[in-house]
Image 1 (cartoon, rainbow, N blue to C red):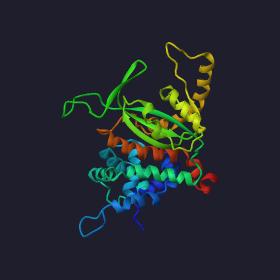
Image 2: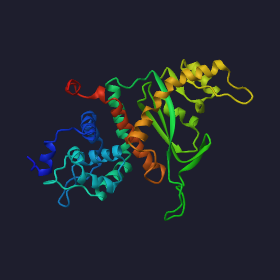
Image 3: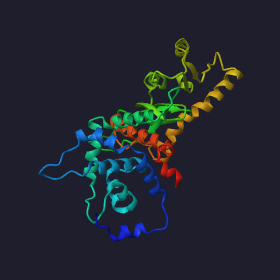
Image 4: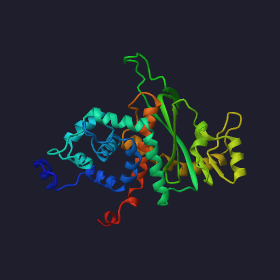
Amino acid sequence: MKQTTFASAAWDGKGKVTRRERFLKEMDAVIPWQRLMGLIEPHYPKAGSGRQPHPLERMLRIYFMQTWFNLSDPQAEDSLYDSESMRRFAGIELAEDTVPDESTILRFRHLLEAHDLTQAIFQEVRALLEEKRLLLKSGTIVDATIIAAPPSTKNNKKARDPEMRQTRKGKDWHFGMKAHVGTDRRGIVHSLTTTDAAGADITQMPQLLHGEEREVFGDQAYWKEADRQAARERGVRYRVNRRGTKQRPLTEYQRRINRSRSKARARGEHAFHVVKRLWGFSKVRYRGLAKNTARLYTTFALANLYMLRRRLLPREWCLS
C-alpha cells in the first residue's frame, strides 16, 4: 500500500469529477497498455546496480499526457507537481514516488523516436481496431492539413527550419509542414505521411490507400484523370472532386456532384479537429520533419482511440 498524502485524501473527498479527470479515466480504459508496452520494453533500459529507471508504464503515460495537453518536457514535469489528476494517471504518489524530471522525459521521447516506436504504436492501434472491426475498409478519404512552423530567423542559426517550406492557400501564405492522412468513411486514420508544406497532395495519394477500398474520396487537389481511369479499371469508385480549368470550367451538374462528395469527404477532417483544435498540435514543437512526424504518429493513434472511445469502453462504463 502506498502512503496517501493529505492532498490526495482531500482529492478523494471532493464532490466533482473534473473534465480532465474524466478524460484521463476514459483514455486509461481504452488504451491497450500491455500491447504498447510490449513494443517498447525490448528497447527500454533495464534495472541494474546503478540508478534505477522509472517504470515503463509511468513514462508512457506521461508521454501521452504531453500529447493530449501539448506540453513541453519542462511543462510536463511541472504539471505532475501541480495536478493531482495527472499524478494519478501516471501512478505517482508524492509521498513515495519520484517525479521524473524534464531530462528523463526528454530521453524517453528520444528513445521512441530513435527506434521508430511511435509508428509502431500507430500500427498497433490500427491492428487493434481491425481486430474489433472498428476500422472500415470499404472506402478511403484522403486529405492533408498544414502544421505551422515558426518563420522567424531569431535563433542561434539565424535561419528558418530548412526542412519546412511555405505554400499559398487561398490568399494566405503558410510556412511549415503537411500531414497527409488516409481515413475510413468515419474519419478513423489508417495511414499517414508527411512532407513540407509545399508538397503536392496528389503525390502522397498512393501511400494513403490500403488497397482494399471500393471507393476513394478526396478534394480537388487529388483529381487526376489518369487515376480516375485506373480506378475504374480496378472497379474502384473514384469520388474525388473534379477540378475545372479556365478553358473547361465545371458545369452546374459537376459542381453539384462535388458538393455531394464533399459531405462524405468532410468526415476525413474529424481527426484534424481532435489533433489541432482539442490537443493543440497546430504548430510544430521541434525542428525538422522526423521529430514532428514521430509526434504525429502518436497523436493520430491516440485520436483514433479517442474518437472510438464510446465503442471501446468496458460495458460497466456504458451503464454508469
